[in-house]
Length: 195
Picture 1 (cartoon, rainbow, N blue to C red):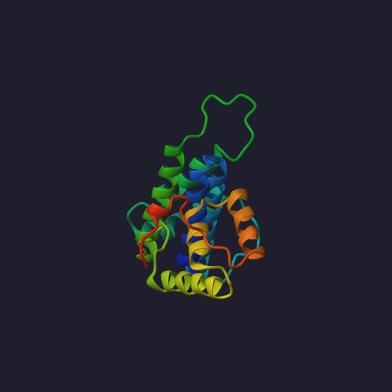
Picture 2 (picture 1 turned 135 degrees about the vertical axis):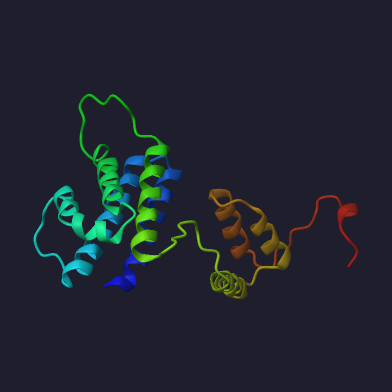
């Protein structure tokens, strides 16, 4: 089971970070809670060599691992309790909230989850977008395929690339597809470069 814990936690924390950009901190915290639960399932498997079958609350589950986690060292038990408490306060309805969730609450939970992964599994998780050379090459090839299927002129294609995404760009794209030989030329002939 250990082989995919890093990917599951990475995906969930990446989702948490993405929701933070939308300022949806409660949704971010939900992804953090799911990451904690993925870690708890892994700890359960590591300790018992089988998957958990019965549901128990996360607090009771964490407490059941105290002795095991104390052997692992570096206070993983306290970190897990901190994550659980950090998530719980924002994922339950409070008719009289005294404080509103903020970005630092989510960051504290994420940092604790990253510490837990480092301590238990020696995994240094990078939750920022991956800028891998293969992904860049895939994007480049996909862009070439999109362009090669088009019979637009180079100037029309360049013009479309310069426009921001949206209705205006789609309108121009439809126009050029209907008029594929249409060229975009500067209005002032003096601005044209000699070929």
